[in-house]
Length: 295
Image (cartoon, rainbow, N blue to C red; front, side, top):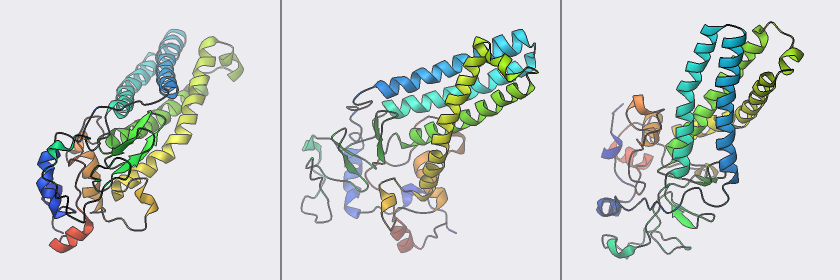
């Protein structure tokens, strides 16, 4: 096995070498985020902070600590949720407010592109150069770099620059769903009260409501999270999943690093570590040409 950095790999189209630096400062326009009706976006935020309030105040403080005098259990529960929730909400907001990346409409800086090159593709909707893996999004009306899909949960398109945040949003949502489900379940089982007695109080009803809400989110998003982690390991987008061949699969480790970055300490942190610029990508054919093994 020969180790090779992504930056050292040959590009899909050798002609793109000349335009990489020219466009490095233009692939983010900051023109579209949270497009359209923000109703679902606001609902998700509202439910998130309501669940946090109920968990910390109704469960940890008022019920476990003040009523049941289980201070250690209350403290451990609170510390756990306060460690996970900021990662979840930051991932969600960064997904929504990060431009996924698009080809700029101003073509005055594109002199490095050889318009006579027949291998260049152009978007029929915008007339702009169409980099590999980019697609026209009919919702935001833009050509999105490494487009995955338009997500109504975040009210924006998931693409090159915010895909890592989207995967982390799914991941930390799944972790919260499991954590809250287990800890609240333990509370109900060890409360020493009848279930009807627990539900006779306002706090008890709110805790059960949060358990139900989190369970629904977990039921929906945990399989979705697993699917996107699998696609990340295969270096495949939702759109590319419909194709038979995947030329961008360069090995699990390299695939993962291309989206999540090379520093393992930052893989699950909502900070930008995605490799490349969204315009060019190494392929497994390039690796075969250089004699590099794909693992």
